[in-house]
Length: 150
Image (tube, rainbow, N blue to C red; front, side, top):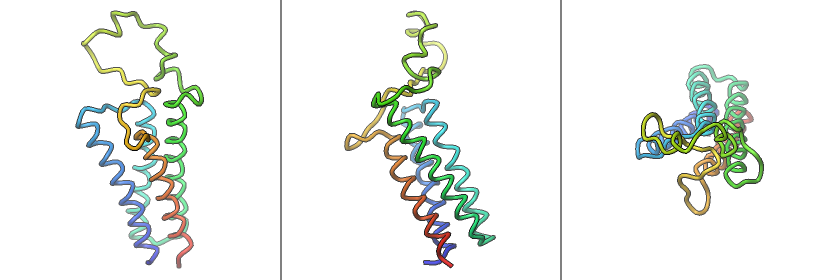
């Protein structure tokens, strides 16, 4: 498999993960703040893959691997927050609700509050953040294989 094919595969993988995230969002699973953080490196990986399709430079494959590893690391961090292994940002976890009244929490007006420390969907005991971490790590390996392939 050529470098171009590997970079295309890796970028397509990021596209598929993003598409899945937006499909879940459409189906009624709104993302939390850390979910959005995980999306940005996928956008970068897709852009890098598009450039690498036309400019077959090895450095682009390393940048794609960095983007995939970044979203994987955020996914691991998010998983740890969901499983109470460590504290998450107070802006999107239970510790950040101190300033809200009961009326604020029960209000049906405005956007739905999505907490980063709550799992909204899981499959085989893994949350969306966990699956993103695993698949993104696999994509990083594909990017690195593309960087090594001449």
